[in-house]
Image (cartoon, rainbow over all chains, first blue to last red; front, side, top):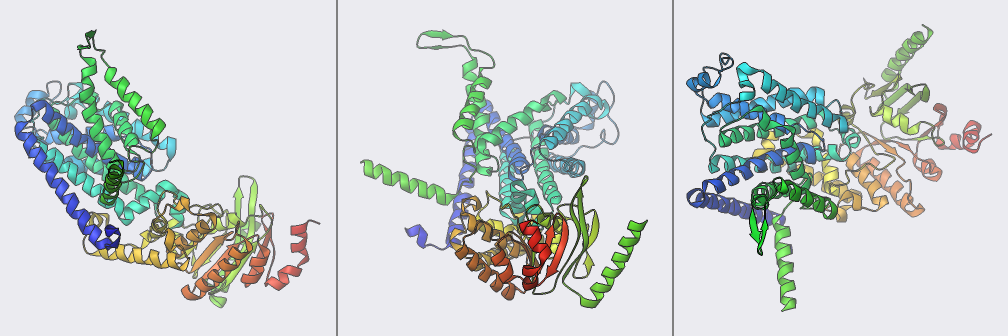
Length: 360
Length: 273
């Protein structure tokens, strides 16, 4: 009752404070993790951040704007190669490129990690901007096929443009620049930017295009421009995530950016709930962590005296089963297509306490 | 040759008329062909400032096609559409909408998953002046304009009597309210011409009565001109100043409600010969 008496403005302030506090808590946890966790756990935490960036930005075009596209593996590849080529020193490049020497001026350039991430994002965004002209002439299934084709093209290019990408050998010996601070810093920035964008008039226009393109156009919304904005915006963050990924695993090759990466992201955004940014954050974290956690089913163990050999690939079976369960019982995703709000959490906690009191 | 000649003459005549009477909205010889099928043939129509014009005809006569051609959703194969003296014939739908022609749809086309308030707010998008970067940073112009958009939506919802539903999903509204929401959304474009495609379809007599009063009020308050398609003859006769009748894509009569009621061709088209 008390919360109803408050003005919306007070709610806004309260929500902001709570959000700031939880971001603070997140970074306090990261600081602790940085000092006390094993390298393996830190690696998983980095992976989670990168996959949240990827899934949230992919969700902007697929879920919020409703344009079913299948290109993130291409954008990640462009971002990863751009950033990697920019941070390697000239000597390291000469050493790596043994089939064909690297072209000038890439052979001379070497910049710092943050600058390379920014370049990776901008180049990927530029690519998306150019791509959107042909790509958004088609809709629905055709859009999916065209963007899928683009992903394949990028892989062929990465394999064959040897003087730039070093071909199938890939780029090795990158510096492990990606720390928890970089990955989670960009993760928070991505989620913040996407949420702000979706809540603005631009976000409403994107959702209107998803709901009914003809009706959106009839209300003065330029559907092409709206789709292009969503596409370019998500490409920027996918490119940055590519750069972070490259400097986390320190070795990249074309085989890293197959359609399987896109497919993995697609599962995440569907499970999280298409269009729900917070749902996608939760799903990305669960899937990345779960994927590692479930390794135990692939290792030999003894359960209640019964020796279990461990079946390679069993993780994927379990994740697929989970996907089926979600599709059967929560078709609109974990969050039911809604966004997380502090008010909902407070109401929900209140109801839970009331229920507990009644039981006691 | 003869066809080109005719078009030329028509264009000439149209220009003259624009200069002479200066109606807000003018349609001359609008024709739409789908492959071999002529859905609409040579429609003439004009709407003067403050006027309510009706477009009637039996099912499949080409009324909705006319609206779709006017708003740029389908491409007319011939004819011209003028709005405030400007030729808008081949403009894109968003450009036409931003110029000041708003419409509703016969088969309701709301953004189902958005709230009622958001549905109305969407229509303000073409008028915003902040960039997407300002939206992310969220200062200055952004907050000011968002507040303005929200207030406008609240005002329009109040006008259409939908305030109580503001936070609900559009798809959860009852049918009659969905029709009203379509009107509220169209009004958010701040149009000078409103095209209504069967606005009272599925409403009972009391609701229809209420809606026609509302429409008159809106026309006066917002200084609007209205063109509407409707099958409810009582509603059309009561509210419209001029009526155009189409049958099988061909306009057969035009005049004041009294004239249309007694026109033999119109009676034949509706009742069959």
